[in-house]
Image (tube, rainbow, N blue to C red):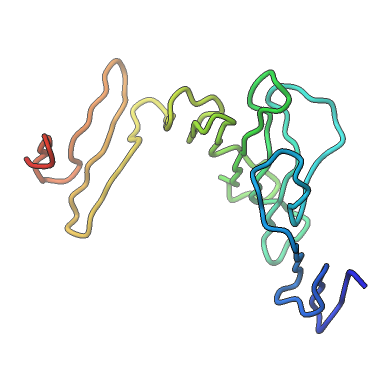
Length: 171
């Protein structure tokens, strides 16, 4: 047999599943195209278009399994149907009926966008005008941040600490 139901857990290709669902695979993962070694394959039956979402995983709260509050979906990120990335969705509202929104995208070329679906560099953080983007805080409460607002941008400290520029690893 290839599937087992044991003690409330369901196993595929394993007779002793460790979680509610365990899918075992005898072949190791590989990056080769069409290797047929993935434990789970998610897809959808639809027409391709740039920006279209494909297979996805949805996450629901404990008390409302019919409400989706977060998700991860494959997404076509260019005009070539083989160029796929990942989109991460969150639920920014306290109203359960509101739609989830895309919070982060990793494009097929590895570019990461936070707050944007079209990152143009390795890491792009898109914020509202007059907002902080990157914030780095250490245990001593030193806060270094980037800021963009109006017609200017800034990098500095949000705390009362000085900002030093490093050259060759020393200040």
